[in-house]
Image 1: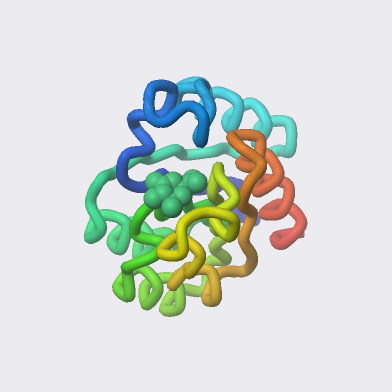
Image 2 (image 1 turned 120 degrees about the vertical axis):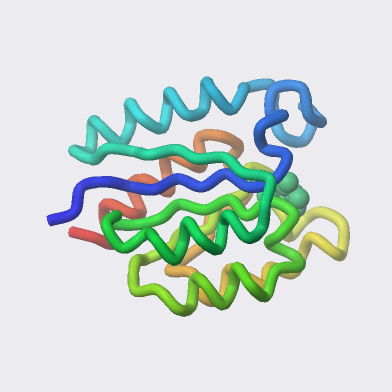
Amino acid sequence: MRTSLLIIHGPNLNLLGNREPEIYGSTTLEQINEHIQRHAEKRGFQALCVQTNYEGKIVELLQEAGNHAAVILNPAAYTHTSVAIRDAIAAITTPVIEIHLSQISGREAFRQTSLTAPVCAGMLSGFGWQGYLLAIDAAVMLTA
Ligand code: DQA
């Protein structure tokens, strides 16, 4: 049984903590990753956390995700624009769970459409950084 989870944080999420804290909170990405690691370990999984600002890098990470039990992906702004990331999710058999810190369906019109969510196993949005812990539980459930 595969016991690792790949967590992909997309563009600008490296700025968490300082970036629009009224929307995204004041917890840094490093702190979120610590919470993720600890929660995954409690569930018997290891979490590999990667952040990139590059669309093509996300495509490559997805293409190479076959050794992981599941992927937890926050495509950030690419959620609303990237056919390439959508196609990569659709092309792989590893389940992908989409996650957003903010509630995208209650924000600007351009954020209300996710090109990527329809090809994911499911999506969590609006629960802040704690949403990552819910996503881990969802991944554990999917892979049980
Ligand atoms: C986000 C929502 C996106 O619309 C935005 O571009 C982000 C972060 C979120 O986690 O709430 O960068 O994915």
